[in-house]
Each structure stands twice: as C-alpha cells, then as structure tokens.
Image (cartoon, rainbow, N blue to C red):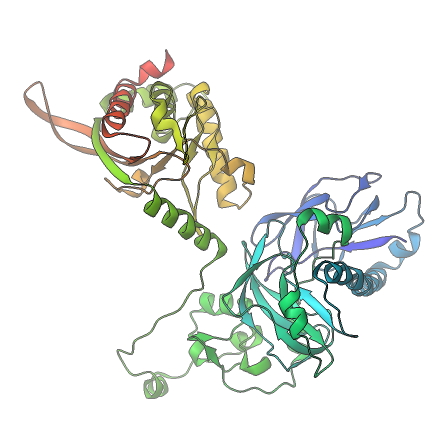
Length: 540
C-alpha cells in the first residue's frame, strides 16, 4: 500500500520547508535509510531520510517550492500502484495517510521492543512500552534531556510533550506516541544517551518496571539492523496544537529547576527577540510552562511595579546548558592539554614581500587568495621537509606521515570545527583558497560531513582577522603541532640600520614534546619563514 510522505518538522521552530534538492526522481527505487531530498528549514539545509521502502511514485513539491509541515511531500509505494485516490483526496488524503502512518508506527513499536527484549532477556508486562532516545536530526548520534515536561506517575496522553531533547543541531520537543502512566525516567535533566538507548517507560499505573529499567540494553548496530525494524523518527510536536490541547491545564507561576525557567524553545527565542525578561512572564502551559502565546500576549510591568520585585543592583545570571558540540570540544581539548606536554615557540615574520606577492597574484582575473591560504600552503611545504612536525604519537611508536592534510580551524556559533584540506602540499594557492572557502561555508551551515573533518596531520588557527596580534592554541590531537597566526601589524622596524615603517606578523607554534623536540620545531619555523618572507619560492 502506498505511503504518503509529509513535509517533516526538522527544527523546533520550523513551520514550513523548501525542497532544495531531490536526490531521488519518480520511478527510482527507495530503500529505508536512503536520502530522499535536502530540505531547507528556518535554521539549516538538512538531509531527509526515507523510513519507507518501495518506488517513488509521486513528488508533490518541486525543487525550490515551499510547503507547510505535514503537507504532502511525496508518495512511495509499489511500482505501478494506483495512487489517484491519494492525489485526488488532497489534504484529506494526506491527513488520512498521516493517521495510518501513526498507527503503523505504533504497530512497529511492538516488534522493535520485542527484539530488544529478546536481547536483554526482559519480559515486558502487558501494555508496557519502552521509549528510547529518538533520532531527531539527520546527524544525531546522541541526545541530552534539556527538560522533562512529565514526571514519574503523571498520566501521558498520545500527543503530549514528554521532554525537550537537545540534539547536535537544536533543542526539540519530543512528543509521546503512547498513552498511559510515566512509570520510569531513564535519563535525568542534563544527562545524555545515544540514539535508541532507554529514555522512559510508559504503561498501566502501578506496573513494576524496575527489572526492565535495570536490564534494558540496546543491541549492537549490526544486530539491530538485522533483528529490529527501524522505527520511524518521532514527529516534533506542533506548538500551536499543543497549546490548544493544554488550554484548560492549571496555570501556576513559572517554576524553576536548577535556576532555569520552564519555557519552550520557541517562546524563549521570541522573548530574546522582543527583549522580554522571562521571569516577568506568567506561563499558561502545563505546570506553568511559558509558551509562545504567553510571549505574544505579554504586557511589560511598569517601572514602579518592577521596582517592588527587582531592586536595583540585583544579581542576575543565566545557566546555559552545554551543547553537544561544546561538550565534544571540551572533552577533546581537555584530553589534549593534559596528555600532550605542550611547549610554545613564538616568531615574528616580515610580511612586506607577502603583501606585495598577494597584490600581484590577485591582479590575475578571477583569482583571489588570502594570507591564510598562503600560510596553509607554506606550512604544507615546510611539513614535507620536517616530517616529525607532521607526526602522531602512539604508546609504542611514532608515525611520520608522508601525506600532508592541513586542518583549518573555523569558528561557528556553537564553538569550533576543523575541516581538513587534503594533500595541501600538492594543491596550488587558488585550489587551497577554493577548498578553504568551500569548507568554511559548509561549517557555518552545518553541512560538513565527518569525512571532511577527519585525517588532519597539522592544524592552522588564524585569529588575525579579529585583530589579535598573538595567541597560543591547544594541539588538535592526534596532530603533534598547531600554528597560531596573528594579525599583520604596521609598525616601526629596523632595516639596514635604519628605522622604517614595516609590516610584521607574529606566529606561535604549539608542539607536543613527545614527538617534536625544541630544535625540530625551531627548524620547521625557519623553513616556514623562508616561504612566507619569500612567497615566490612556493611556486617553484
């Protein structure tokens, strides 16, 4: 039977989506897990994965066209199947298909849980359902519980918001597909788990599920693919619909946990845009939670009234939960700083020839290189002459890499990523410039693939464009060194015994003393100096 695929909700604030690219065309075979299309949301362009198998029978939204969430996007079924009823039914057909899809999801829950149950030797009492960490984005590998909207013992209806889950891309509301009582919470607020690990247990009130919680385990990826059918990604709740469902709920003042106001992601975003202090807003959502309509209907308290509650000079702060990216950065850099014995070598290069070289190079039509491109190229050439700086440390050996892959640190809103320019020593300056520009753009749009961030043998971090003269960096392991690049500064310099106006740049090389001795690092910088101060030698 044909399945209607609706426009998915790929971000917490997404109301409509635009098809950027179709990766399948009508008549193509579609396997579960295939990428159907790239969907442009209000936050990013994301790959949309199929949860159905069959033939792509109909495309409802062409490339460049936009439609609302849950509207018909495509139809997948058996080759040659008649789908005229679905097409003629319009919105009703889409809604009916969505309802059938929800029912199908419920039916699929049982064998999926059964597969896990067999692996973990856990007997599930009648009516009990194990809720696992959902995959809420295309690249999500683990999630963090930002806020629970239900507590153990609460009644849960199908469609209720169970929790807010922080993924690697956004914080999203997670909707329950089951009705019953919340019997067990597997993760506390702030805790993380991989996709498909235990999140909660729902079932009849009073059911003992302690044995399930203790013994539940997820099968290995290989076993899971073989035994357990892949569950459809749970839908993200429609805020407006949720508000309507909860309109008659009790409305106490907003409660806080660990100093944090209970507020939906959309309401928080609107409050920031309007400059509204959330502590002054009366929440009308469940348990006093602040939702979208509370922000839209908020009337600021007069100055005199505010003074009664918020005296002048009152201390104020906001606890911002660590994102998955920030936690990954913290783990990697802490490991590097406290396992690799760092030391630093600082130099200052004369940039007069580099400035003139770049001006001449960029005078060529359709050619534009940056100082950073020149530094990447110079480092790549110097590393070929000093393989120990291009090395990696292992407990029983040191690996001297013959290839040169340069990681280029790129700042993004959530932290820092390091895309890699592969075989940089073999590329021309324009090729390096194009590669860096492309990778940096992908980084800022969250489109980098894991392969584009792997395999670096050396890293360059450049803060010169921010006006920073000098700084030091933490080594990006498993590299043995990282180069910190400062700003080009115009200042008095001594040349031929005379004080003249010159341009210089300061650089700092952080080295792992296990692989790079001081003399080795110094020799590398001397070679680098030769290329930077005489850039024409990079073309020879």
